[in-house]
Image (cartoon, rainbow, N blue to C red; front, side, top):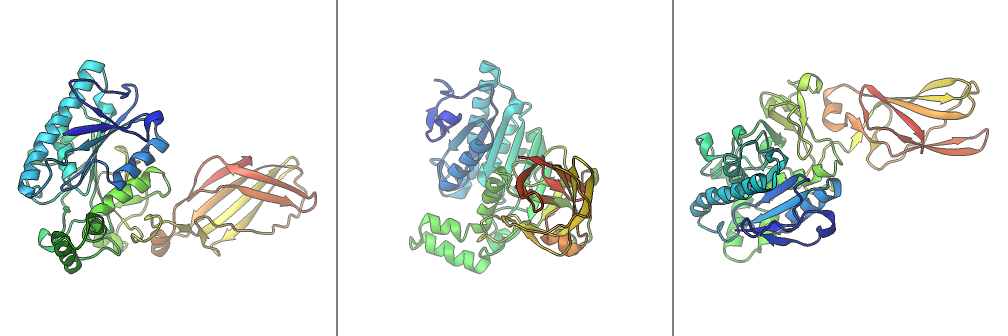
Length: 408
């Protein structure tokens, strides 16, 4: 097994091989450490892992260790699943070496495993006291589903274990994941089964045959037969850059969620964020959400919002409040909306602007429109004084709240 380290920002574009016995290279004990662990038939540096690594280093100054166990994850699957225990033990040895010899904190380590790699993370976690977090990206189901917790990922393997299920169809239907909960919180985008626009059983079977006979290359196989299975990786990477809220809600099952039988409120810990920003303080258990299809630039379903928007202009003389939009316009990502606002009184020199937002509260809007919205800026043209000023927000705008915009 080889462990490749590409950690701090000055070495983010290159990796270096590290060994538990000989040294840890540029690994920095003062920074959190993320381990990537690939699954069956994969290898250490495919494009999706590099993209995830770059996304992480864009938002956090951390160590990223990419695990390559490609010499032990080949066919047959029975052998690879057995080797997963060995790889997990080796990762645990390395992390325990880091904590024992360099005073690193086990709680600063985050293992991110896809498919069989998620089960590897579980094997590692059970050998590391106080491991901070394990994220399971569509954990492998075959040979692990409905087994004893000691032989699969489970909540005792880390202080916080979050799991994303995207290919949980029955194994006979060529599902590679599982619907069984494995973590403190288990996310089921689109029910955790076949993902939007991804091939289903018959197409998967044909694409598997094409791959096995050499007609289709690995990249084509990943994009087709493994589409739903890989969706967990893409969703997690997309969540890192915080482009979408990916809010998921507690419900008894996906059918009830789609039938609006469960609350869509985040009060009292009834929701959590899928992906990198999942929180141990958010909702626990099984959570559900809907995403866009795989052809979208962003998978987040919340690409637009609609509701009542009220603005309050505060000047040196007085304030004035008016409705900017009363559920008449759909505000889309990257869009610009312009309004002419007549004032009946002179407010003086405009100092700041308060904007409040209340999303239309019905099932359709909850499914299609975001409860959270980010404004880039407000640009005000004062016709009387022929002045143009830009005002920037102090925070994101949540439904039922207000945000102050000050001069940029």
